[in-house]
Length: 378
Ligand code: TXA
Ligand code: MG
Image: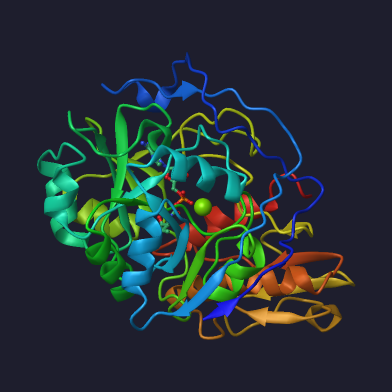
């Protein structure tokens, strides 16, 4: 057991944090005109990050499930690996724990959380599965897919975690450590990615500690994750909608459904603005340095995030080069994306130039995250 008492998390001056008290004003938005109630606006205020002075325990994953479950039952916050990224878990039925979770992340409380459960039977207690949702669950669970469904009448997820929506986002993660924790706890666990709101998602326990050390109770270290980008989110509306590209490629989902997916409406334009739909906060993966996309040349002083065997013009001028996959493999690139963005950002170059990435398979999720990293920093 390792203590990280007194650890100072990185909190850029621009970071904003919101109150966790929700005050609802109904609004209509495009994404919810399909038989689901519109998301409700939460009132939030900007204030300096709340000081949280916790001792964060870090446990190796072997045998940590019981300690994690005990901590969750006490209302604690536990970071753990899933196959996509590390999640920050709290008891989905405990509003106090969820309020602390929003506070630890500095996350706007109008941005709802994904409920994680161990299997489809547990998922059916939270959300109403139609034939399409059932087909997707059977094809891709456990795995990197989240389904947004109408809540059941006795859905155990606290309103604070669903931001007052009639819908709930549900996922069955495949990672054995996540599965062991869910089995030991025996109830749904809400878990956003275990980073400060607006930061790049964590793919190792060290990333979690650097964002949230001193702000959460426990980190279960299960080594680096396998997929590297977050789950694909599908809104199971009348016509299924891709709310967030992620670890299951769009093409694979369309094959199972036998139809193409509706595209979610355009992004809202800042992290704290009311999003058009939850999950669509535009600047969401922001490094501190400016990010320049589709770079076909490198400018002096830039760090280079490359892809494939051929480097762009001027690559020798780059302060540092990190290649997402020199053999052009998009799955390998996804596993490295967030770690490399963190590493390049830490080199404090003048900016980060990113080579074009093909927009197919996991490339769609990679490009989505890169666009968000670039927003407002050019
Ligand atoms: O891979 C993942 O999904 C990871 C791991 C930890 O499971 N989790 C994750 O959670 O990425 P988070 O909170 O960083 O992103 C979840 C997204 C949010 O953008 C949220 O707005 C959206 O899911 N979401 C949650 N509930 C929703 C709902 N009812 N309708 C639409 N979007 C929803
Ligand atoms: Mg996240």
